[in-house]
Image 1 (cartoon, one colour):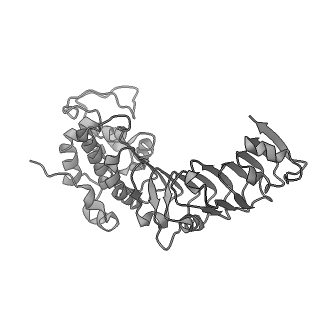
Image 2 (tube, one colour):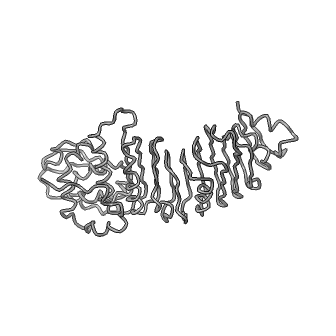
Length: 375
């Protein structure tokens, strides 16, 4: 009986152990051979039959097409002659499942797929109830196998874990991805349940884009620093307090685009968005009945802001610093904000915001402002 593939616990501290567990990728050794030999359930999950790796199997390569098909008895393997740089580029245009399927195309590809720069995982169980535990076990093994065996940097990672079954493993999966110098990370999680994030995420030096969706808790470390992060999406997250949101944005040194969606129970009364480099801001506030009896305030300190899109009917007070740079603003049901906007070139108003702009005594909009009233 073959050895059980490594579990998720084996790379909780992947940053210090990956080098010890990985082989040289110049030639496929027993490490990668064992993965392919033991992966019948794994291949079944990917849609491959147990006989898919037979020597006489006929197939049409989804990646490399030649004008003349090779003879079955040909000793020349043209695919294996391709350099790793070209194979990596090819893999960047395929899904993770397609990349691993491609390992049957050439013997050399049995290990080269571990260099794929993009990885995407989706459990696809959100519409099925109850979740089939056997299928989820295959999905977990799929994610564990790809992340543990990955042999190079990851450019993009998409992780969609819609069920509560995935919650206990998200922390370790994100930690494994961070150890691969990921540049773009997107994580979808179920909106029920509380999930923490690894602190290494908040000091990642390689992240350029970070998107978090679901019930994550932003319990931040003392030091937060994203030296390269330019795009940030935060959708329905939970903050420990007002200062956690403020410290998060303060650590975004070069952030240019922010998408912030707030929902009931996020534990923030005064939202302080102070990002000197910010150019585009999308802010949506929903279902804040829990603060009906409290002072709710939004502070936007973005002197370089060029575009603003906001829907925030709950704010009782605004403090803004962006009027000198703002080119276009789209405001839905945020009447208090309209009073603080001046010198914008294009202004689109919806709902209650329209009434405020029609009052000359309360609106600061320039006479040169192009205003559109939307129903």
